[in-house]
Picture 1 (cartoon, rainbow, N blue to C red):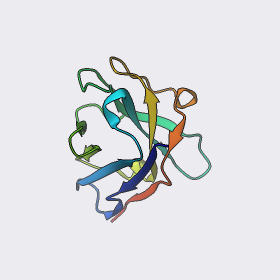
Picture 2 (tube, one colour):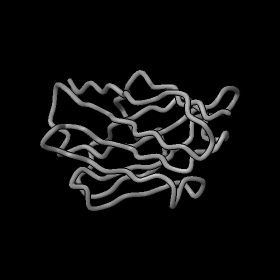
Picture 3 (cartoon, helix red, strand yellow):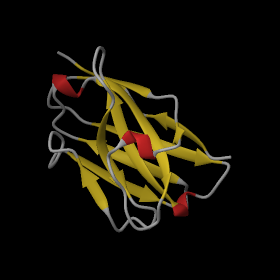
Picture 4 (cartoon, helix red, strand yellow):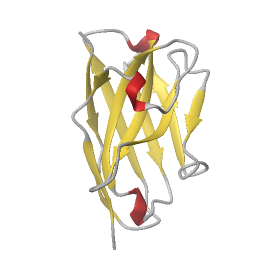
Amino acid sequence: QLQLVESGGGLVQPGGSLRLSCAASGATLTVYAIGWFRQAPGKEREGVSCISGNGGSTNYADSVKDRFTISRDNAKNTVSLQMNSLKPEDTAVYYCGALPSIWRCGLEDRAYNSWGQGTQVTVSS
């Protein structure tokens, strides 16, 4: 059974950078699209970015375009989210989810059926 573990969160000042990782075990990631989602206190979970199983398709929320970059290393069974120019509104718990999809991905969390435990990202001075 596929299990996901997020890491890399922390406290960073506005304008700073963090790199989140989603490590998989129990199955190969090659056939799974991976999505990054976040949930701030009092808000619904929102899609941030996703990448297809073969890495050929990516999507980003408008709020993070040109600041976040998603990538994957299927040989290492990991997906990373490089977050630059962080803003206080990026503060949230970040989760990665898996969706069986080689060619496409989307930012609707209902489609994803495996989730990690989340990692806290706090952007504050």
